[in-house]
Amino acid sequence: MPPLSPPSPLGIAFFGAGDVSEHHAEAVRRCADARLVGLWNRTPGRGKEKADSFGCRTYDSPEELLADPAVEAVSVLTNLETHLEYATRALDAGKHVLVEKPVGVTVSEIETMRDLARQEGATCMPGHNYIYEDSIIRSRSLIDEGDLGRLVAIYVMYHIHHPEEVAARYPGVIRQILTHNTYVLLYLAGRPKQVSAMKATLHYDTIPQEDIAIVNLKMENGALAHFCASFAADDHSADPWTVIVKVIGTRGSTRYSYRDWVELKPAVVHSQTYTAYRGSIINEVAHFVNVCRNQAEPLSTLDDAIAAQHVIEAIEQSVKEQKTITLPTP
Image: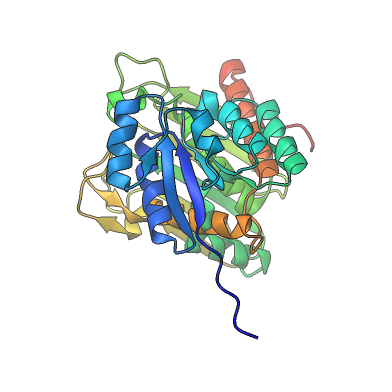
């Protein structure tokens, strides 16, 4: 019997052509099992410019994109408030979906995506890219195998200054960045049961969004955790907490840091390129393709996105009420 031919590359299209689309386009380009068919953007000129640089076509409308039989999967890379609309339209059209984080505005929005994906028998995967980094996966393995002993403390820190005109496009660091911190914590250490948070705006003059937030958490397993997310300033110290994840247990510890991989070329918001961020999206997209082909399970699901959203909403409540919030038992 002759060998079976390998499946043709998965046809992927983008809703949205913002900053993160460049990383997703690079990820698709590097994945032998995927190809970028095209994109739609609400601003046609920007969409055409990005499509030309990516080597793909543009669509005049979301309907045209979803009607294209060459498109098997859609990456939702639009602003947060439109994720539900575009994800559900893609699922209704029979497409697999990768949704950038934050996945939804509310828990109920993410539940709607999850339930529709189950109904359609399609993949709908959250863009929780950090956990697709080898160092994070290795940390999880060490924790699961008991090599670190009992968990004591988990730190997830982010200090990257964003120019005001860039930060203005985002909902604030609680939604935009602490979502990263939260899904990483859930992946490594399970659920928190209490959160206490503060926020401030220290650097920006013309936008109301917070540019720094700090959170203390008590985990269900008894460990303590600490988050910081800041657009206000870079960390220029000798061992900077640009983006860092530390797990400390009674028998060992692990560390993951953006500063372990740095390229001396400018990125969207920084004078340097942190290769780990780009690499995490490359790994995530390759894994998404395998999930769509029924060759893998996602490392993070929409149920995890729902759990993360519960934490984010508890953080916001803690800030508003200036008290410690106990999360609901799942």
